[in-house]
Image (cartoon, rainbow, N blue to C red; front, side):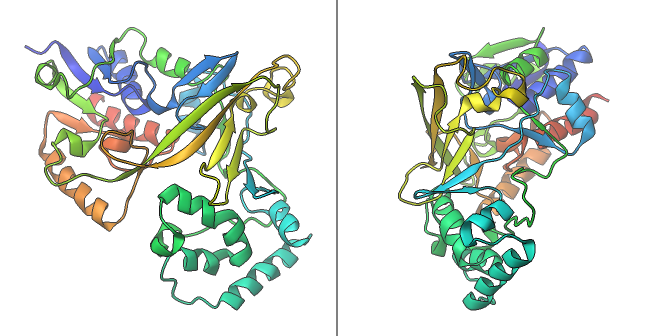
Length: 377
């Protein structure tokens, strides 16, 4: 006889939202996670009174008011605006590409001048049918922007030269002819005051949770412990890679505490030249500290800061999968696993690894609430 209504494998956003809603409907849930903590990749840890984003920068953004209200029931969000800076050699540029960027690149001042410059470069390149990512990017924004701000960063991300990457990877590059450094177009944006972990703690309150408990190590016991399984791990691993492995890109993080109040003056600085091995440096305090974010002036009271260098990494099944590689081969392979999953009445696959798709946080919540509607309402 099953002990639980639902076994939820993975305590990230997808699984935790489902567990929270199921618990409200008096369903008995067990949440397990192979890591030593809850919250998956949005896990934050307090170090020196600074909330550290352990698995890379997570900025919540959405244009869906219902989802914004939903997440705000678990934490108060500040008014953080994502405005990354790009460093190319000894030059600094604002991201996304906007009038501040173009003014620095070419000494132009008006949108008309910037548009003219980009069009001149596109015309000079004369690329009609782009054969690879490099040609595609130049055909969209010209050579200067591509070489300084796209080429090296993209090659590091993918672990291949841009001329070896397919053109479809870059369908468009956001070019904005306004003096606005806000990276996202979404209406709602911010960071939870006090970090993300508290959100998942509140979601899982009153629910049985087992940490450092790997589904695959306890599979025989766990497959019969609940009426249904919500599985947020890799779908191909669940089916013992019977059609082959789905591919990912991984990440590696180097974090250090520095005895200064302010290291780089911004939460995220991208390093766009290929010769610098990391793609960005995150200075975590800037997500929550600063006069507009409701905490003391940066550097005034905190004489320490915590920075993380983020390195793209070649993935294998021993490493953490971060980014799905949704090319033709992998998408076709996923469809084979999905056909198996669709016939499986006991197991429901969800989230980034279960659905083999990169999701922003708001989209993960949307997907989980869709499942709630199908399963519980």
